[in-house]
Length: 49
View 1 (cartoon, rainbow, N blue to C red):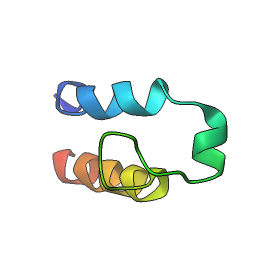
View 2 (view 1 turned 30 degrees about the vertical axis):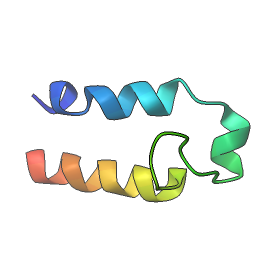
View 3 (view 1 turned 90 degrees about the vertical axis):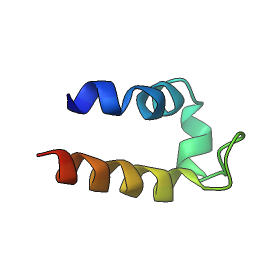
View 4 (view 1 turned 180 degrees about the vertical axis):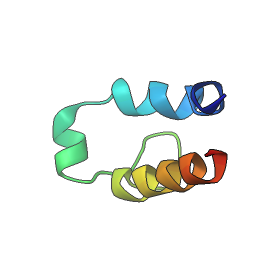
């Protein structure tokens, strides 16, 4: 259940360049940076548990 709800987020995070994550660059298709996106994913997981 958790994995199906995070499918799109996982695809974005695991298909990006590690340098982009280290530099906390903005996601190309969204108005959010990597660090904020990871925090958002954690909140989704916590609500699912």
